[in-house]
Structures are given as structure tokens and as C-alpha cells.
Image (cartoon, rainbow over all chains, first blue to last red; front, top):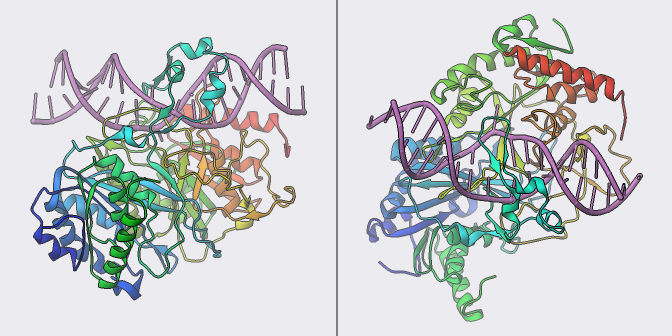
Length: 279
Length: 279
DNA sequence: CTGCACTATGAATCGCTAA
DNA sequence: GTTAGCGATTCATAGTGCA
């Protein structure tokens, strides 16, 4: 039961070494169905759920009750149709294993793969599915706050106007109310569930298409320094590097020794290159 | 069997008046489960699919073979969990009725409703599900090309709603242009499957749930002038107005006479207000 | 006609309390 | 037990009017 290691093997069995309720966060981008046949051998769409479920069961065992499981996935197109295995997976995880499907974040890929097809535009987004074991889970929202939009600067340049000082009610009975003056001294606001990130185009041949900012964001949001992050499909080690930079512990697993080796090299370089520093 | 009308009634039966293979595009935003109880009754999540499927069957009958069906929907949260009925609906439409699930566009709501909760951020996106009857369908990609954005800001900060220029038609779409070609000498590119639009916030009367730019975009993408667009849940008439401006025919249906009346008024005003105009 | 100030609006969600 | 109602929380945008 080691920390800060990249272990070669199938996470299904490798995780047996770890006790239950051990990890604070699981964030991963598993091989997609039919995709990357050359590295992982490819899992047929109709085999995907039976393949994934036993592993998800392990994840549930080793995840702390207040921990979070983030799954990055996007169904691909086959014969002009989006495959439905991701939708089925969400239903299976909730129904067969009792996971709570808490949220679906959207990762908007700002520089997505160029290309043109007669009946389809470029695919510029992926799903980031959040699952939890219970309704109450650890979340540190203040760690991911962003600067308030530039509307506020203009708005309050001349002080707060009359209307902004009053409490406005929405006409529909949704109960939305707001007092704009509340933002007068606010520098930071909370983000939404849409993430705007560019993809990193650095690594070729590897299976990680995860930009560093993605695990970074979720690690900051769902863990504290000293917590333990698991990536059961570590690929080139992006999650491990992000965790290290943020002073969290990590455990990475990959079935391919070649990927594990690359990840270890990258993590080691990281340690030499810059002892602390994020960004 | 009339064109350019708003019909009061349940689309399930009203559509009997129309022949099969009649409409070129169906674009609609049905009442979501448990939402808008004060206007529509509100449909329980577990009743949603049996409610929707027979109507979808009608849509399939009246849609042309090369036509497209666009469904705007988003599941809400109940007891800390996202409801799964939308996922189940997609599966039901493909499995039980043979619809092809061709694409899922994301509507990124740049000005989503504010709010703060201990375990959740603001919901800033909705689904735009595309279904077709066959693999080959009509699509006019050149009609929705956009000038290439200045991707100057490559900010790594996540969650920032920097206004991506992409598909950002300001105004009330009063100046909808069909010929984009004469748009300065900037390079035009095809958009992606992520649409960045603000909800409309006019300060007179209730505002439309659907921003005009949404039906506008899909009507341009999937139809030609003279084609026929159906919105079986027309609401305040946004789809009809968009179709009229683009010189397409429309048929709108709504179960509430009050909504039909509002839609007819709005469409009539449109006809008087601006005969053509390119802005 | 352009720019600036100001106003209006929203398919929300959670926790608590009352019935 | 379970549900229904209400208060509390919170941004970013488009339209209008006026200088």
C-alpha cells in the first residue's frame, strides 16, 4: 500500500492492495470504447459496461464516503450515430452500484481537433461526470473562484445606482432575487459547471488527452493538501503531476508498462524541474 | 392542414391533421420534468418518457426522411442528484422508435441564473439533442459559418465566461442574415457543437425561455427558404418568429390557449415591425 | 450615431420548518 | 417517515434612454 507511485497492472486487481475508504478523490479519463485500439486493444461499445462496472465497484470500495469520483468521457460517432454506451454507463452506475450522479460538468475544448464532415461539426466538448457515495461530500469551492466579469468594473465605476441597491424579484415564481450592490466590493465569483480549457497538444502517441488544468481544477475543488488522489488509468501521468504540484498524494495505475514508465519519467522531471510552484 | 399558424391543442392529436413526411425541421423545447409548474402542469420525472414517446412517434411520422429533430432539454437536480430521465429518453427514442441520435450540441448559457449552494455550482448549459430518421439528412453548413475569432485570450483560468466570439449574434437577432459571405474580408470558419448564447433578458414582459438565436441557428443549418418548421411546444412563439424572419414557413402548437395568444400577438407585431431589414 | 448609465431578467438549489 | 413551502444565496447580459 504505497503512496506516490505509478503501478503497472489492471486497476481491478491492483486496487485490492488498498483498504476501503482510502482515497479522497478519483479523477480519470478511461479508454473510450473503440478508441485507441493500438494502445489498449480497444473495448467494443457493447462490452464497455461489463468491463467498467467491476472496476467502478473497486473505486467505490476505496473511495472515502465523502470523496468524489470524476469520470472524463465522451462517446464517439459510429456510422453517423453517437454511441449510447456512456448514457447506459451512467444509468448502470446509479442503478446497479448506488453511485449518486451528482453533476455533469462540460469541458469546452477551445482548440478542438479541426476537420470538416458533411453532416457534423467539430466536437468541442467532453463530459466530466461527477459521482458520489453520499449527498454530503467534501468540496472547497473557494479554491476555484475566478475574477468577476468586467461588467462589474463599468457598473460600479460611478458608484452604485438606485436600482442596483434595491432588491429585485423575478416575475416568474422561481423566486430569483438579487441585489446588484452586493457585488460592489467583490473581486472573485464562483465558476459554473462549464469549463473552458484548451487542450494540450504536446504529447503524441500517448493515451492522455487530459490537459493539466483539468485534474488541477478538480483536485483543488475536491481535496486539501495531504489528501490522496487516485487515477486508475494514469496514462502519461498528468493527474499525478497535478497532484504533486498541489501537494497532494497520488496513486496512478496503468495496464501498460510503457505508459507507466513515461509517467514515472515525467513525474521525476517535475520533481527536479520545479520543486513547488503551480502554474 | 395550414401553414404559418399557431394551433391550440396537444401536439399528439393536433398533428393528425398533417400528412407524413411533411416537415423539414422540428425544433422545440418541451416542458422539462418538474419545471414551470405554474404555467404547465409539470410532469413527474417517472412519467416523462411515457408522456413523451407517443408525441415523438407523431414527430417521426410528420418529419421528412431527410429532416431533423432538435430537442432542447436539461435535467434538474432532485435531492442532490441529477435526474436520469433525459438519458433514458435518448435511449428510448433510439431503441423503441428507431430515431438516430446523431449529435448532442451544448448550449452554453453565458448568463445563467445566479445562486450558490454548498455542493454545486451554477448550471450554465443545456442539451440540444439532434435526432434523424436516416443517416443522410439535409444540412447547410455554410449558412452558419462564423468569422474566425481572435483567440488572443488563452486564459488558463477555468470557468471564466469570456465571451467567445463564436456564434455571438447580438441584438434580438433582428438582423438575421442569410448571406454571410459579405461580412468584411475576415475568414469564415465552421462552428463547433458548442453554442455560446446568452438567455434573452428584455425588460418588457416575460422573456422567452429559448433565445431567438437558438431556433435561428438550427433553422439556417437544417432548412432552406420555403421549407416548413414545426415547433410542437411553441410557448411564446420564438421559433415561429425566427422561421418568419428567415422566410421559412412554420407551424406552432401549444396546449395553453394563453401561450398561443401571446405567440400570435408576437408574430403579428413582427410582421408589422420589420418587413425585411438586414440591420 | 455612438457611448455610457441604468434597468430588468432568469427551466436554480438547498436547508429548514411546518403539516 | 414524507412532502410542501419559504428564505437565502448569487452573475452576466441585452435593451432602453439620454447626453
